[in-house]
Image 1 (cartoon, helix red, strand yellow):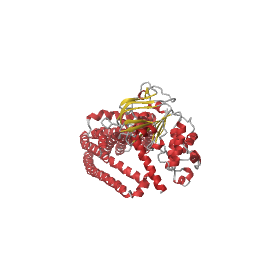
Image 2 (cartoon, rainbow, N blue to C red):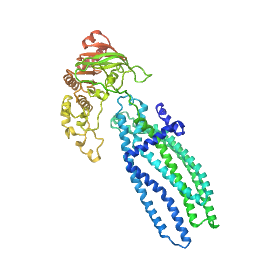
Image 3 (tube, helix red, strand yellow):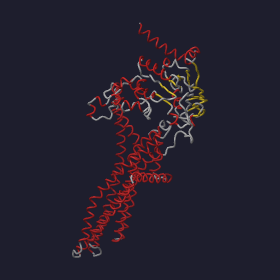
Length: 623
């Protein structure tokens, strides 16, 4: 098991051994889950609780009424109307209550799940930066929290109510049994101690097993997704890796099944022993009750009550233990949900946000240092750079030089470790990230392809709905292609959500080529009238003609705007007003294309390497 999973399991293991240090957290989770259920639907919560309380009293009532009927029958059969009618009513309740309880449980579960999911993803969306999402520990916790949001709060409530119902029923039966035989009551309670301890031990073992196989289960899901993923299908079939991935998936599945089998065997042994103990106690009690009845110490009704009380107590105690185990297991997952919902912002938010404007945007990087982890390497080392207002500035450099990191800091996905970034003189740390980003338009190299319509894919760039989707598509050179789709801009750019009947009609959904998706993403980034335009490899993956067209269009669009260009194709940024060369996290050169070539430094060497490649390719074509 990897280190990151070990980190996740530490609080879980503490709970599994019942550490005192985590009891306040467990109590807090219990209160939070109950409060969530109450807020989701007070009426359903109260209804569920009342139905459980009534259901807890019905078995005891039936046992007492049966005793009364039998005693009156043995005494001559008089005055049977009321107890028999009450028994009939109890029969109706026994038939109806489970259905009503199930109805309330399902409705409450849906409402709780909806509210919990809303809170979870509201908390996730409120995280202003990227640090949490790039943390593998948080990523694992987030996946578990998503599962927990759907089922855990309701399971906690169900388990608690099941525990209450079992405890009420067991308590009523024990009190009834004490009236008949205090000595046998003591015997039954003493025998219940090992049963409760053993069931709780099994619950902890089951929970421990689930967590031990958790990483393996996620790897099984990963391999299964790979084997059915359209994007992965090409490589899997080309390289013939399907058998390897399938074998790994099955090995993980067998390992998990083997661990589950060991737990199943323990359950068989322990629960079999508990069943024998329960049978022995019930048998001994029955022998005593029959003997007492024969000696005239108990009536026939007392015997029936005694039998019902012993059986009912054992069943109720089992329900109580099951409820405790359900709550216990659910709280282990709820810890991840609670941790995500309570996660502090990964960026400090200013108490009073400074305003920024889109016009004449001037960006200054002042001695900016940055690293992703406190003990990690420096990604940026004292960067000083000015992006002049209304001009195009290009960033070039080798992979890992720090170009993408600068863009992340400029969008305030992170804050500098040292130094400052200023927007028209305002430190970005004094600006609310949402306010800042409204003034930035960007296309990233790892752009998104949303399983939405063409119109929606572009419109996500400015959800205010003010900008023209069609105009942005024209700028990106994709308008004609989208307009010619079966349903035009309202065509779904996916076939993921279609039914089998829908898939037979191509008009219901289409798949774009990589170059077309690039243009859709570009249109999305150009949709808003932003003061700063960031273009990170905007023409990557396009053919030479399309690349030329895109850069000509972008040159027209960014004229008079402040823009930041990033590209490994140096010919694409040679017309930038300023080119900044990054190397090992530092700006080592600045100037125009011609200036940098004349200096014969890092930029000149990179440009010469690319130019030589084109010359060699041209020579081969001419030959």
